Each structure stands twice: as C-alpha cells, then as structure tokens.
Image (cartoon, rainbow, N blue to C red; front, side, top):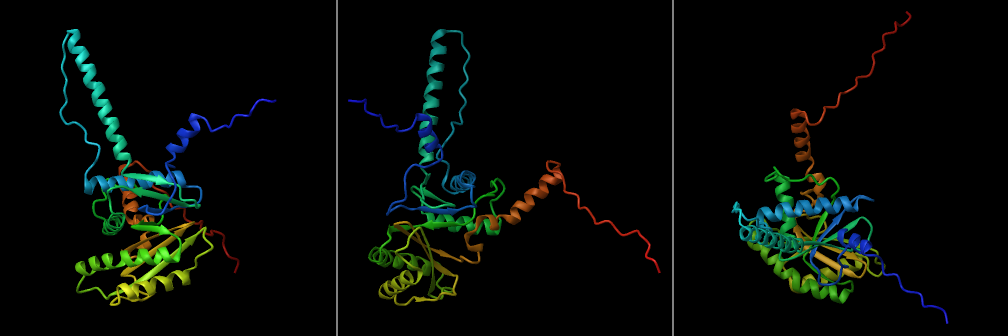
Amino acid sequence: MGKKRKFYNGSKQDQYKRFKDGECGKISPGVTGIIVTHDRGREKLCRNDVFKVLNHFADLWYGSELKQNSEDQSTESDDENDIDSALNEEIKNIKDVNSKQKTSMQRFCSLKSGCNNIIFIKTKDLKPSELVQRIMETVYKEDELDDLPLPRHVLRMHPVAKSCKAHLIDIKAEVETYLPIVLAEILKKNEDTCKKEFAILYRGRNNDHLGMHIVVEAVCDSANLVVPEWSYNCRTDDVVLLIDVIQTVCMMSVVQNYAYHKKFNLRELCKPHAEKVVDQKQEKGIIKKKKLIKPAENTEKVDQ
C-alpha cells in the first residue's frame, strides 16, 4: 500500500491574499449592494477607488464608525506601578481601535461577482439606492468635493435594492412587492413633476436562459397588475428600473434621472472636478504644465 496523497488547501499566505483582495463570499439571492464596472485589468485599482469614495460620503453623511479618542492622556512618573498602568491602558486602546476597524470594514465588503470587469460591493445598514443616488447628485452639482479622492478607475455604479433567483416566477414576485413601495415614495417627493412613467433597463451577464424581451414583458405584466396607474415608456429617463442578471442571480433597483447623470458613470461625472484639481496643482507647482509644441513654419522660399 502506498502513502495517501494529502490534499493541498493552500498556504496561509494565499488565504491572506484572497481576504486582502476582498473576496469574502459570492453573490447570492437576497444580497443588497452596488454593482461597479471597471476597465479590463483594473480590478484592484477600482476596488480601492470605490472603497475610498463610499467611505468618504458615508462618513460625511452617516458619521464615521471609527471614533478616535479626543482626550490625550499623558502622564509622566518614575514609579513602576504608573508605568505598568500606562502600558495596560495603551494595550486596551489598541484593542479598541482594532475592534472598531473590524466593524468599520463590515459597512462595505466586496463579493465575487463571477464576471469580468465587474465588482460587487455589499452594504450593511445602508440603503444602496439612496446612497448611490445622492452620490451622483452631489458629484453632478460639485458640492462637498473638497476632500473627495478622484475615482480614476470606476465606471458605472448600479445600486441593488432587491435580488432573487434568475427565474421569471421569482422576478415577477419580487417586482410585485418592490415596485409599489418605491413608486409611492417617488410620488410623495415629486407630486407635481412626476409623469407616472417608467423605463426598464435590462443587462444580462453569463446567463443564457433569460433575454431582454422576455424579462421586460414579464415585468410590465406584473407592474400592470400592481401599479396600473403607471405606464411603461422606453424613452423616459425620469424613473428607470435597473435589472441586472449575473449568472443565476437577478438584481434590481429604481433610480431617477439616469441619463441626466451620465448613466451613473462616476468617472465622467468627476471630470470637471478632476480638471479643477489638476489646474490647482499646476498653479502650486506640484505638477508641471505641459508645453504645447507648435508646428514648424515653412521658411523655404517658393520659386516664382
């Protein structure tokens, strides 16, 4: 009898790299968060930019989870008891900070999307549709952008308020429970300007069972049963129902002014702010101005 071959489960360093990359699970039905697209080969850079932007606005609007102690305790003494007590206090403070950092990491967490050029950010105790809508509006108005890190590698951000299995029966049931609540909230906010029309934007990835026409017809049928006063209009941009199907999971959310905000492309919205930042750095001398090279003029005499 020969020796049994041991199964290699990966070293601790490989497991640390997986956790460091943010792969702490897979997308499953019932998850809420944000779908982020990026350029090919820019996954890590996009993940870093997304976390910086989300933490910036979340700390600004909802308060930071990591609260630093404002009181500085500094005591000087020669006794050994005082030194031991000071060391114990420092150890306790370090443990408290580490525990708070762990809780702050749980606010946003990245999951495996199963598709190329896509990152999924899971949210906790936050409504992703309201957060993304508010981010796009503030960036478009160029408000509260003084300390905003420039998202160079982030493209579109689609919020995910509801998710279910990628089957027509489950999609219809989810739409019938989700649409009346969201559309009623939109009517309360915009009673005078609301036209009671909505569009559907479908995008399927790594899924061959569903198609755009099948899903749109099913969603329209269920919407007519639940919200008959609302009508479907493919050309409107005021209220848009985003439906993203990734493998076996269907994710949806309702957004407003989708085309007006560059189809929620954060990099395109931040272009004016990025140009201002570059101009300020050039004035301060941090970045050198690019010299425009003029084409050489023809000095040769033309024979007459």
